[in-house]
Picture 1: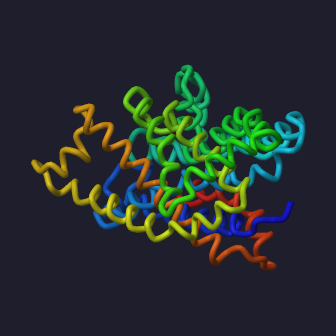
Picture 2: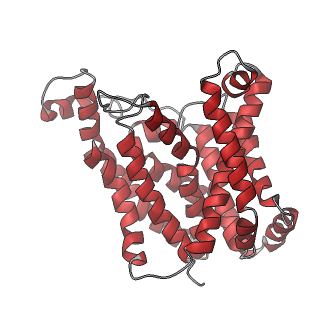
Length: 331
C-alpha cells in the first residue's frame, strides 16, 4: 500500500505543537504540575484552543495509520503494539514520572526532602499511592502525559476486530458513509457519533482520561481509519475545509466569549451544565468544534503535505520517543 505522507507530517507538526503547548502550561492560569509566578489569560486562551483538537488529532492520525498494519494477524499486531506502547508506558511510569511528581511536590510545598527519600515514599503505597479502580482514568493518573500510550494501546487492541472486518468485508459500510457525506459540508456530519458519546457519558464520567474520554478517543481512532480507507475522503476534506474553519472559529470564539459574559444567555448555554438541555448543547457543540478543526487540519495536510522528504522518516521515527521524554525534560 502506498505511503500516505501527510499523516506522518501532521504527526510531526502535532508533536511540535504539544511541545509548545506544555511549555505554555507554566504560564496559564489553570492548575499544572509547576507554575510560573506571573501568569497570563492570553496564554490560557491559546492552551484552551489547542486543547480542543490536539489529542483527538493524535488518535485520528493513529487510526488513519492503522490501514497499514491491520492486515497482520492479531498476534503480530498485538506484539507490535505492546512493544511500541506498553513497554515505554511501564518504563516511563517507573523512571520518567516520579521526577515529575517530585518537582510538583516541591513546587506546591507538599514535600521538602531529597529525591531518594521521596522515591521511597512514592513507590511504597498502592500503585504509587493511587487506588486501583475499574476505570481507565487511573491509566492517566499514574502516568501523567504518558496516558496517551496506555489509551492508544487499549484502543488499538480493542478496535482490531472491527478494523479487520472493515478492511476485509466492510467496504459496503464505508461506501455508504462516503455517499452519506457526499454533499458540500457533509463531512462535518461525522461529528455526530462523538457528540452522542459525549452526551451519554461525559456527565457520568467527567474526569480526564476516564471512560468517556476513552470512548471518545476510540471514535476518533475509528473515524481516522474510515476516512483513510477510501481515498475519496481526501477530496471531501479539501472541499469542506472552509466550512469547517468557519464553524470552528465561530464555536471557539463563542465559547471563549461566554466566560466573560456572566448572566447572559451565551454564558448559560456554554457554561451551565446543570441544566440538561444546556449540557446537551455544550457536548454537541464541543464535538462539532473539535471535528471542524480536525477537518480543516486534515485538509491542510492533504493539500500541502502529501509529499516525500529526506527529513520525513527520521522526524516521524522521533515522534514517539520525543513525546515520551519531552514533559519530564521540560519540567
